[in-house]
Length: 80
Image (cartoon, rainbow, N blue to C red; front, side, top):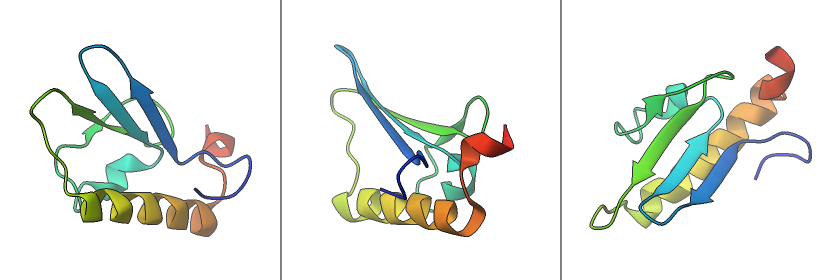
């Protein structure tokens, strides 16, 4: 997603949850209101636990929008 060297999505699988982190995720809450602000770079996290669901089309849209924000605004980590 995005361009090389420009992170836009973090996926972390743990025994009790899956964490989806989106750089500039604070700007994506209109797509997925469960995204919670966290840390630098406007990071927003979506935590999914057993039994939680997310619409695949919404997840694809989140990925597209996160990449589009990188194209439009540049490397989020460079703004630190």
